[in-house]
Structures are given as C-alpha cells and as structure tokens.
Length: 298
Image (cartoon, rainbow, N blue to C red):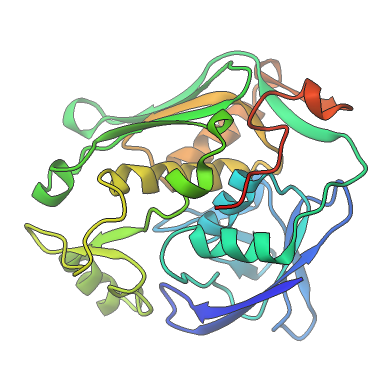
C-alpha cells in the first residue's frame, strides 16, 4: 500500500490517494472514500463519461476526473488489479507526468498474482476519424503481436513545431519509465487564462505542466525530452486505452487524437465483436514481449 497527496489540476483541491492491492480479475477500481457512503468506480471504456480536457469516469453521480496519467503508469508497468482510494473527484496532477505514479507503484511493490493474465487481441483494423484537410484527426488499432504506439502532432506553434512531431514507442523495449513516463502535460497561457476564468486549471502551473506563450516555453528548466510534447500524447493514449480494463495486443497509431477520440476508438472496437478476442496466457513466456513481464525500475 502507498499514499500520495497533491492538488487537482483543474479543481486546485488538495487530494489524497491510497493505492491498495486487489485480487486477480478485480481490474482497476477507484473508490471515492470522501462520500457519505464510499462508491466504487470500476475502470472500463463505458465508464468514461467526459473527455473534455481529461478522461473522467463515473458511477451514478460519483466521478473521478483526470485519470489518464495514473492509468498510463499502470499500463506501462503491467498492473491490472488495483484499488485506488481517493478523497476528492480529481486525481492529483503531481508533476504533470506519469513519473510520480510509476515511482509510487514501484515503491509499494508490485506482486505477480497466481492467475493467468487476460488481454484483448485486435483481429482487424478499427479506425475512427473526424474533420478533413487541416482539421483532420484520426486514431486506429491494427493487429500486432505485442503493443506499440505511434503518434503525430500538429499544433502550428513555434515552440512545439521546433520539437519532434512524431514518435513511435514499442512496449517490448522495456523503456516506458525512461522514455515516456516523464513527459509532462502542456498548455498555452491564453488557454490557461480562459480555463481559469471558467473555474478550471486552478491547480496548474509551471511546476506541473509545460506552459507556453505565443512563441516559447516559459519553464526555466526547458523540456525533459526534445520531443516531450508528442511523448506526452503517447503517455495520454496509453492511459486512455488502458480504461479498456485489459492490456491490448495491437498497434495504435494516431494523428492529432485526444481523449475523446481515443475513447471513441475503444467503443468502436467493443461494438464490433469480430474485431477482437479476449485471450489468456497460462505461461508468462506465451504472452507477447513487452506485455509478459513487469516493467523494470528506472
């Protein structure tokens, strides 16, 4: 068991999280312990009820916002059974990346469970898209015996355009913690000002996000990776896809996608019974590389 305290990116509220082990086949379950009666919110694709600015899951009136960075850490580390007790309706932003959650989970200790690992294998291509021309965005899943992701961004902003626009990451590399987890969320001062006027981004700042004006990055320490922006989109996509509840055996690729489109992609997959199958691996060595072993430490 391990505990973290931080602030919510949008609410600015102090939040406490307690991560607790769960039995095999429990999945990942958030528990709102601040309500008169604790409410469990099991993570799955149809529990996602809002994708504006972040991924939100709900059970009745109980919600948890901004789950994607913690979910990304669970995906990157291969954790599939976990209780997350939370005393507010937003996961703390911590440093704006998944690195703090990776550290917390590894500090708590990750156990191998005596049950076969379940995964979802994509059997045929599934695509969602919207817009056209310079408004086009799309995301797709294709069959691949492993888990790899590629993402391309297009923000038409000088600070972003001067960095890497496209990145590919394969879980088989074992480098999630080093290459992806430290990439921070980012925003533009004009958007932050507008969000704050609407009661959002109240906990955001230079210590938990990359912030840019019209021309440059304002953080004095600069970027953690020379392609940190697009790597954060990979980090987010891993978290968004992991709300499926099981690891994916597939290749994900996307252009300008975000939380809403990633969730649409999962729902499109689940609505086509011929596009996927649930598989189990009795022996670790039978599972695809990158999905069979727990991620190494830093």
